[in-house]
Image (cartoon, rainbow, N blue to C red):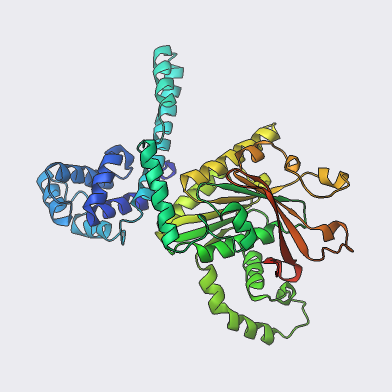
Length: 439
Protein backbone atom coordinates (compact mmCIF):
# COMPACT_ATOMS: atom_id res chain seq x y z
CA UNK A 1 0.00 0.00 0.00
CA UNK A 2 2.87 2.39 0.86
CA UNK A 3 4.18 2.15 -2.72
CA UNK A 4 0.79 3.32 -4.02
CA UNK A 5 0.73 6.49 -1.90
CA UNK A 6 1.34 9.49 -4.21
CA UNK A 7 4.90 10.75 -3.81
CA UNK A 8 8.02 11.65 -5.76
CA UNK A 9 11.30 11.05 -3.97
CA UNK A 10 13.16 12.44 -7.01
CA UNK A 11 11.32 15.76 -6.79
CA UNK A 12 11.77 15.92 -3.01
CA UNK A 13 15.52 15.37 -3.25
CA UNK A 14 15.82 17.75 -6.20
CA UNK A 15 14.09 20.58 -4.32
CA UNK A 16 16.38 20.07 -1.32
CA UNK A 17 19.37 20.09 -3.66
CA UNK A 18 18.14 23.37 -5.19
CA UNK A 19 17.95 24.86 -1.70
CA UNK A 20 21.57 23.90 -1.04
CA UNK A 21 22.65 25.47 -4.34
CA UNK A 22 20.80 28.77 -4.20
CA UNK A 23 19.75 30.65 -1.06
CA UNK A 24 17.36 32.93 -3.00
CA UNK A 25 15.67 29.76 -4.27
CA UNK A 26 15.67 28.31 -0.74
CA UNK A 27 13.82 31.36 0.55
CA UNK A 28 11.01 30.93 -1.99
CA UNK A 29 10.83 27.17 -1.39
CA UNK A 30 10.50 27.73 2.35
CA UNK A 31 7.72 30.21 1.67
CA UNK A 32 5.90 27.84 -0.74
CA UNK A 33 6.23 24.47 1.01
CA UNK A 34 5.87 22.97 4.46
CA UNK A 35 7.18 19.72 5.89
CA UNK A 36 3.88 17.92 5.19
CA UNK A 37 4.55 18.37 1.47
CA UNK A 38 7.36 15.79 1.86
CA UNK A 39 6.50 12.09 1.99
CA UNK A 40 9.94 10.67 2.82
CA UNK A 41 10.70 10.97 6.55
CA UNK A 42 14.38 11.63 5.74
CA UNK A 43 13.50 14.43 3.32
CA UNK A 44 11.01 15.85 5.81
CA UNK A 45 13.72 16.00 8.53
CA UNK A 46 16.10 17.74 6.11
CA UNK A 47 13.47 20.29 5.10
CA UNK A 48 12.69 21.09 8.74
CA UNK A 49 16.43 21.42 9.32
CA UNK A 50 16.61 23.93 6.43
CA UNK A 51 13.76 25.88 8.05
CA UNK A 52 15.66 26.09 11.35
CA UNK A 53 18.94 27.11 9.69
CA UNK A 54 17.14 29.82 7.71
CA UNK A 55 15.29 31.12 10.78
CA UNK A 56 18.63 31.40 12.60
CA UNK A 57 19.78 33.64 9.70
CA UNK A 58 22.53 31.24 8.60
CA UNK A 59 23.41 30.07 5.09
CA UNK A 60 21.72 26.84 4.02
CA UNK A 61 24.61 24.59 3.00
CA UNK A 62 25.96 21.15 3.92
CA UNK A 63 28.09 22.51 6.78
CA UNK A 64 25.20 24.31 8.51
CA UNK A 65 22.78 21.46 7.83
CA UNK A 66 25.25 18.91 9.23
CA UNK A 67 25.74 20.94 12.42
CA UNK A 68 21.98 21.25 12.94
CA UNK A 69 21.37 17.54 12.29
CA UNK A 70 24.07 16.49 14.75
CA UNK A 71 22.75 18.88 17.39
CA UNK A 72 19.29 17.29 17.08
CA UNK A 73 20.63 13.73 16.93
CA UNK A 74 19.33 13.31 13.38
CA UNK A 75 22.60 13.04 11.43
CA UNK A 76 22.86 9.24 11.42
CA UNK A 77 19.08 8.90 11.20
CA UNK A 78 19.03 10.50 7.73
CA UNK A 79 22.00 8.44 6.49
CA UNK A 80 24.97 10.62 7.39
CA UNK A 81 27.31 12.40 5.00
CA UNK A 82 26.61 9.92 2.17
CA UNK A 83 22.91 10.77 2.13
CA UNK A 84 23.66 14.50 2.33
CA UNK A 85 26.14 14.29 -0.57
CA UNK A 86 23.62 12.38 -2.71
CA UNK A 87 20.96 15.01 -2.11
CA UNK A 88 23.36 17.89 -2.71
CA UNK A 89 24.20 16.44 -6.14
CA UNK A 90 20.61 15.53 -7.06
CA UNK A 91 20.18 18.70 -9.14
CA UNK A 92 22.78 20.42 -11.31
CA UNK A 93 21.05 23.81 -11.01
CA UNK A 94 18.13 25.50 -9.28
CA UNK A 95 16.49 26.66 -12.51
CA UNK A 96 13.62 24.14 -12.33
CA UNK A 97 12.73 24.50 -8.66
CA UNK A 98 9.24 25.89 -9.42
CA UNK A 99 8.34 22.71 -11.29
CA UNK A 100 9.53 20.63 -8.32
CA UNK A 101 7.40 22.74 -5.96
CA UNK A 102 4.36 22.05 -8.16
CA UNK A 103 5.07 18.30 -8.15
CA UNK A 104 5.37 18.18 -4.35
CA UNK A 105 2.22 20.28 -3.86
CA UNK A 106 0.20 18.00 -6.11
CA UNK A 107 1.45 14.75 -4.53
CA UNK A 108 0.73 16.16 -1.05
CA UNK A 109 -2.75 17.19 -2.22
CA UNK A 110 -3.57 13.64 -3.28
CA UNK A 111 -2.17 12.23 -0.03
CA UNK A 112 -4.50 14.56 1.88
CA UNK A 113 -7.42 13.34 -0.20
CA UNK A 114 -6.57 9.75 0.76
CA UNK A 115 -6.52 10.70 4.46
CA UNK A 116 -9.76 12.64 4.11
CA UNK A 117 -11.33 9.64 2.38
CA UNK A 118 -10.30 7.39 5.25
CA UNK A 119 -11.71 9.90 7.74
CA UNK A 120 -14.98 10.01 5.78
CA UNK A 121 -15.28 6.21 5.92
CA UNK A 122 -14.62 6.22 9.66
CA UNK A 123 -17.14 9.03 10.28
CA UNK A 124 -19.70 7.32 8.04
CA UNK A 125 -19.37 4.02 9.91
CA UNK A 126 -19.68 5.91 13.19
CA UNK A 127 -22.65 7.90 11.84
CA UNK A 128 -20.96 11.09 13.06
CA UNK A 129 -22.78 13.89 11.17
CA UNK A 130 -20.69 16.65 12.75
CA UNK A 131 -17.43 15.01 11.72
CA UNK A 132 -18.73 14.40 8.19
CA UNK A 133 -19.67 18.08 7.91
CA UNK A 134 -16.20 19.24 8.99
CA UNK A 135 -14.46 16.84 6.59
CA UNK A 136 -16.68 18.01 3.72
CA UNK A 137 -15.78 21.64 4.44
CA UNK A 138 -12.10 20.79 4.71
CA UNK A 139 -12.18 19.02 1.35
CA UNK A 140 -14.13 21.85 -0.26
CA UNK A 141 -11.47 24.44 0.60
CA UNK A 142 -8.44 22.22 0.07
CA UNK A 143 -6.68 22.95 -3.21
CA UNK A 144 -3.18 23.17 -4.67
CA UNK A 145 -2.01 26.74 -4.06
CA UNK A 146 1.47 27.65 -5.30
CA UNK A 147 1.08 31.01 -7.06
CA UNK A 148 0.85 34.39 -5.38
CA UNK A 149 -1.83 36.81 -6.56
CA UNK A 150 -0.57 39.73 -8.64
CA UNK A 151 -2.19 43.06 -9.43
CA UNK A 152 -2.84 44.27 -13.00
CA UNK A 153 0.19 46.64 -13.32
CA UNK A 154 2.51 43.82 -12.24
CA UNK A 155 0.98 41.38 -14.74
CA UNK A 156 1.11 43.95 -17.56
CA UNK A 157 4.74 44.84 -16.76
CA UNK A 158 5.72 41.14 -16.95
CA UNK A 159 3.95 40.86 -20.31
CA UNK A 160 5.72 43.93 -21.76
CA UNK A 161 9.05 42.64 -20.45
CA UNK A 162 8.46 39.31 -22.19
CA UNK A 163 7.50 40.95 -25.50
CA UNK A 164 10.51 43.30 -25.28
CA UNK A 165 12.88 40.37 -24.76
CA UNK A 166 11.45 38.51 -27.77
CA UNK A 167 11.76 41.65 -29.91
CA UNK A 168 15.42 41.97 -28.91
CA UNK A 169 15.95 38.33 -29.88
CA UNK A 170 14.58 39.16 -33.34
CA UNK A 171 11.45 37.01 -33.01
CA UNK A 172 8.48 37.95 -35.19
CA UNK A 173 5.93 35.82 -33.30
CA UNK A 174 5.31 35.35 -29.60
CA UNK A 175 4.88 31.57 -29.64
CA UNK A 176 6.87 28.61 -30.93
CA UNK A 177 7.00 28.59 -34.73
CA UNK A 178 4.96 25.84 -36.40
CA UNK A 179 7.35 25.87 -39.35
CA UNK A 180 4.49 27.06 -41.56
CA UNK A 181 4.92 30.78 -42.27
CA UNK A 182 1.34 31.72 -43.16
CA UNK A 183 -0.09 29.73 -40.25
CA UNK A 184 2.28 31.49 -37.85
CA UNK A 185 0.92 34.83 -39.08
CA UNK A 186 -2.61 33.77 -38.12
CA UNK A 187 -1.98 32.20 -34.71
CA UNK A 188 1.34 33.75 -33.67
CA UNK A 189 2.94 30.32 -33.31
CA UNK A 190 2.09 27.77 -30.64
CA UNK A 191 1.39 29.82 -27.52
CA UNK A 192 2.00 28.85 -23.89
CA UNK A 193 -1.19 27.86 -22.10
CA UNK A 194 -3.14 27.32 -25.33
CA UNK A 195 -5.13 24.24 -26.29
CA UNK A 196 -4.92 23.83 -30.08
CA UNK A 197 -7.36 21.31 -31.54
CA UNK A 198 -6.52 19.86 -34.96
CA UNK A 199 -9.52 18.10 -36.49
CA UNK A 200 -10.38 16.42 -39.75
CA UNK A 201 -12.01 13.42 -41.36
CA UNK A 202 -9.92 10.25 -41.89
CA UNK A 203 -7.14 10.53 -44.53
CA UNK A 204 -6.91 14.32 -44.22
CA UNK A 205 -3.41 14.06 -42.70
CA UNK A 206 -4.09 14.87 -39.04
CA UNK A 207 -1.26 12.75 -37.67
CA UNK A 208 1.15 13.91 -40.38
CA UNK A 209 0.29 17.53 -39.58
CA UNK A 210 0.74 16.94 -35.83
CA UNK A 211 4.13 15.27 -36.37
CA UNK A 212 5.22 18.22 -38.52
CA UNK A 213 4.18 20.64 -35.76
CA UNK A 214 6.06 18.50 -33.25
CA UNK A 215 9.24 18.26 -35.33
CA UNK A 216 9.25 21.92 -36.37
CA UNK A 217 8.42 23.19 -32.87
CA UNK A 218 11.15 21.09 -31.26
CA UNK A 219 13.71 22.87 -33.45
CA UNK A 220 12.34 26.29 -32.44
CA UNK A 221 11.95 25.67 -28.70
CA UNK A 222 14.44 26.88 -26.12
CA UNK A 223 17.25 24.42 -25.34
CA UNK A 224 15.92 23.56 -21.88
CA UNK A 225 12.54 22.43 -23.22
CA UNK A 226 11.24 19.07 -24.43
CA UNK A 227 8.23 17.98 -26.49
CA UNK A 228 6.02 14.99 -25.65
CA UNK A 229 3.81 12.99 -28.00
CA UNK A 230 1.12 10.71 -26.58
CA UNK A 231 0.14 8.46 -29.47
CA UNK A 232 -2.90 6.31 -28.72
CA UNK A 233 -3.28 4.91 -32.22
CA UNK A 234 0.16 4.45 -33.80
CA UNK A 235 3.19 2.72 -32.28
CA UNK A 236 6.42 4.60 -31.62
CA UNK A 237 8.49 2.89 -34.33
CA UNK A 238 6.04 3.86 -37.07
CA UNK A 239 6.02 7.43 -35.75
CA UNK A 240 9.83 7.65 -35.73
CA UNK A 241 9.89 6.24 -39.28
CA UNK A 242 7.32 8.79 -40.45
CA UNK A 243 9.29 11.62 -38.90
CA UNK A 244 12.47 10.47 -40.62
CA UNK A 245 10.66 10.22 -43.98
CA UNK A 246 9.19 13.70 -43.53
CA UNK A 247 12.51 15.32 -42.73
CA UNK A 248 14.65 13.50 -45.30
CA UNK A 249 12.03 13.40 -48.10
CA UNK A 250 12.50 9.65 -48.21
CA UNK A 251 9.53 7.62 -49.45
CA UNK A 252 7.78 5.70 -46.64
CA UNK A 253 7.64 2.52 -48.69
CA UNK A 254 11.43 1.95 -48.44
CA UNK A 255 11.00 0.80 -44.85
CA UNK A 256 8.64 -2.01 -45.81
CA UNK A 257 10.17 -5.49 -45.74
CA UNK A 258 8.72 -6.28 -49.18
CA UNK A 259 10.09 -3.16 -50.91
CA UNK A 260 12.10 -3.68 -54.12
CA UNK A 261 14.80 -1.14 -53.26
CA UNK A 262 18.27 -2.46 -52.31
CA UNK A 263 18.46 -2.34 -48.53
CA UNK A 264 22.12 -1.23 -48.58
CA UNK A 265 21.06 1.91 -50.46
CA UNK A 266 18.47 2.61 -47.79
CA UNK A 267 21.05 2.20 -45.01
CA UNK A 268 23.45 4.50 -46.83
CA UNK A 269 20.78 7.20 -47.12
CA UNK A 270 19.92 6.83 -43.44
CA UNK A 271 23.56 7.27 -42.49
CA UNK A 272 23.71 10.46 -44.53
CA UNK A 273 20.67 11.93 -42.82
CA UNK A 274 20.96 10.52 -39.29
CA UNK A 275 23.07 13.28 -37.68
CA UNK A 276 20.67 16.05 -38.68
CA UNK A 277 17.65 13.92 -37.80
CA UNK A 278 19.03 13.10 -34.35
CA UNK A 279 19.82 16.75 -33.67
CA UNK A 280 16.31 17.86 -34.70
CA UNK A 281 14.40 15.20 -32.74
CA UNK A 282 16.48 14.44 -29.63
CA UNK A 283 14.16 16.49 -27.42
CA UNK A 284 11.01 14.70 -28.60
CA UNK A 285 9.72 11.86 -26.41
CA UNK A 286 7.00 9.42 -27.48
CA UNK A 287 4.57 7.45 -25.33
CA UNK A 288 2.42 4.97 -27.27
CA UNK A 289 0.37 3.55 -24.39
CA UNK A 290 -3.04 2.56 -25.84
CA UNK A 291 -5.97 4.21 -24.09
CA UNK A 292 -3.78 6.33 -21.83
CA UNK A 293 -5.78 8.36 -19.32
CA UNK A 294 -5.63 12.05 -18.50
CA UNK A 295 -4.12 11.32 -15.08
CA UNK A 296 -1.40 9.18 -16.65
CA UNK A 297 -0.52 11.96 -19.09
CA UNK A 298 -0.17 14.44 -16.21
CA UNK A 299 1.98 11.99 -14.29
CA UNK A 300 4.25 11.21 -17.25
CA UNK A 301 4.73 14.91 -17.98
CA UNK A 302 5.86 15.46 -14.39
CA UNK A 303 8.14 12.42 -14.45
CA UNK A 304 9.78 13.41 -17.74
CA UNK A 305 10.45 16.92 -16.43
CA UNK A 306 12.20 15.51 -13.39
CA UNK A 307 14.06 12.83 -15.37
CA UNK A 308 15.42 15.22 -18.00
CA UNK A 309 15.70 18.33 -15.85
CA UNK A 310 13.94 20.23 -18.64
CA UNK A 311 10.60 22.02 -18.96
CA UNK A 312 7.69 20.81 -21.08
CA UNK A 313 7.64 22.94 -24.23
CA UNK A 314 4.87 21.15 -26.15
CA UNK A 315 2.45 18.26 -25.63
CA UNK A 316 0.70 16.52 -28.55
CA UNK A 317 -2.14 14.02 -28.01
CA UNK A 318 -3.24 11.79 -30.91
CA UNK A 319 -6.14 11.67 -30.41
CA UNK A 320 -8.71 12.99 -27.93
CA UNK A 321 -11.70 10.68 -28.45
CA UNK A 322 -9.80 7.45 -27.73
CA UNK A 323 -8.17 8.58 -24.50
CA UNK A 324 -8.87 6.25 -21.59
CA UNK A 325 -10.14 6.93 -18.10
CA UNK A 326 -13.36 6.56 -16.22
CA UNK A 327 -16.25 6.03 -18.64
CA UNK A 328 -19.87 7.00 -18.04
CA UNK A 329 -23.04 6.46 -20.02
CA UNK A 330 -22.78 10.05 -21.26
CA UNK A 331 -20.25 10.27 -24.09
CA UNK A 332 -20.62 14.05 -24.35
CA UNK A 333 -19.71 14.46 -20.67
CA UNK A 334 -16.73 12.11 -21.04
CA UNK A 335 -15.28 14.09 -23.95
CA UNK A 336 -15.99 17.39 -22.18
CA UNK A 337 -13.98 16.12 -19.19
CA UNK A 338 -11.05 15.22 -21.46
CA UNK A 339 -11.02 18.51 -23.38
CA UNK A 340 -11.13 20.55 -20.15
CA UNK A 341 -8.39 18.34 -18.71
CA UNK A 342 -6.13 19.02 -21.71
CA UNK A 343 -6.82 22.75 -21.43
CA UNK A 344 -5.83 22.60 -17.76
CA UNK A 345 -2.70 20.65 -18.74
CA UNK A 346 -1.63 23.54 -21.00
CA UNK A 347 -2.11 26.00 -18.13
CA UNK A 348 -0.44 23.86 -15.50
CA UNK A 349 2.71 23.18 -17.52
CA UNK A 350 2.62 26.60 -19.20
CA UNK A 351 2.99 25.07 -22.64
CA UNK A 352 0.90 24.64 -25.80
CA UNK A 353 -1.10 21.41 -26.03
CA UNK A 354 -2.08 20.12 -29.48
CA UNK A 355 -4.94 17.62 -29.41
CA UNK A 356 -6.14 15.79 -32.50
CA UNK A 357 -9.88 15.23 -32.84
CA UNK A 358 -12.29 13.42 -35.08
CA UNK A 359 -15.00 15.13 -37.11
CA UNK A 360 -18.48 13.77 -37.71
CA UNK A 361 -19.65 12.78 -41.21
CA UNK A 362 -21.85 15.85 -41.52
CA UNK A 363 -19.59 17.43 -44.16
CA UNK A 364 -20.02 14.40 -46.44
CA UNK A 365 -23.75 15.12 -46.64
CA UNK A 366 -23.15 18.70 -47.79
CA UNK A 367 -22.42 19.91 -51.32
CA UNK A 368 -19.25 21.55 -50.05
CA UNK A 369 -17.11 18.99 -48.28
CA UNK A 370 -15.23 21.60 -46.27
CA UNK A 371 -15.50 20.91 -42.53
CA UNK A 372 -17.05 23.36 -40.09
CA UNK A 373 -16.73 23.93 -36.35
CA UNK A 374 -20.08 22.30 -35.77
CA UNK A 375 -18.66 19.03 -37.18
CA UNK A 376 -16.46 18.46 -34.12
CA UNK A 377 -17.45 15.03 -32.89
CA UNK A 378 -19.06 14.12 -29.56
CA UNK A 379 -18.99 17.44 -27.75
CA UNK A 380 -19.38 21.19 -28.19
CA UNK A 381 -17.06 21.45 -25.19
CA UNK A 382 -14.07 20.86 -27.49
CA UNK A 383 -14.92 24.02 -29.40
CA UNK A 384 -15.51 25.87 -26.14
CA UNK A 385 -12.28 24.78 -24.39
CA UNK A 386 -9.97 25.17 -27.39
CA UNK A 387 -8.14 28.44 -27.90
CA UNK A 388 -7.53 27.53 -31.54
CA UNK A 389 -9.35 25.03 -33.76
CA UNK A 390 -7.68 24.01 -37.02
CA UNK A 391 -9.64 21.95 -39.55
CA UNK A 392 -7.85 20.03 -42.30
CA UNK A 393 -9.35 19.61 -45.76
CA UNK A 394 -8.00 18.02 -48.94
CA UNK A 395 -10.22 18.62 -51.95
CA UNK A 396 -8.38 15.93 -53.93
CA UNK A 397 -9.58 13.24 -51.50
CA UNK A 398 -13.22 13.91 -52.48
CA UNK A 399 -12.60 14.97 -56.09
CA UNK A 400 -9.49 13.23 -57.54
CA UNK A 401 -9.57 15.40 -60.67
CA UNK A 402 -9.61 18.66 -58.68
CA UNK A 403 -7.25 21.35 -59.95
CA UNK A 404 -6.17 21.83 -56.31
CA UNK A 405 -3.77 18.93 -56.76
CA UNK A 406 -1.81 18.23 -53.60
CA UNK A 407 -2.87 21.49 -51.93
CA UNK A 408 -4.36 21.05 -48.48
CA UNK A 409 -6.45 23.72 -46.77
CA UNK A 410 -5.56 24.46 -43.17
CA UNK A 411 -8.68 26.20 -41.90
CA UNK A 412 -8.23 28.30 -38.74
CA UNK A 413 -11.89 28.03 -37.71
CA UNK A 414 -11.47 29.44 -34.21
CA UNK A 415 -8.75 31.73 -32.88
CA UNK A 416 -9.45 33.18 -29.46
CA UNK A 417 -6.81 35.89 -29.79
CA UNK A 418 -6.62 36.49 -33.50
CA UNK A 419 -8.16 36.25 -36.95
CA UNK A 420 -9.68 33.21 -38.61
CA UNK A 421 -9.02 32.19 -42.19
CA UNK A 422 -7.47 29.57 -44.46
CA UNK A 423 -3.84 28.72 -45.16
CA UNK A 424 -2.76 26.53 -48.06
CA UNK A 425 0.00 23.95 -47.60
CA UNK A 426 1.36 21.31 -49.95
CA UNK A 427 0.72 17.76 -48.74
CA UNK A 428 3.43 15.36 -49.90
CA UNK A 429 1.66 12.04 -49.45
CA UNK A 430 4.65 9.79 -50.19
CA UNK A 431 6.57 11.45 -47.33
CA UNK A 432 3.47 12.01 -45.14
CA UNK A 433 4.39 15.63 -44.53
CA UNK A 434 3.19 19.15 -45.20
CA UNK A 435 5.28 21.94 -46.71
CA UNK A 436 4.91 25.68 -47.24
CA UNK A 437 3.60 26.37 -50.74
CA UNK A 438 6.04 27.99 -53.12
CA UNK A 439 5.23 31.63 -53.75
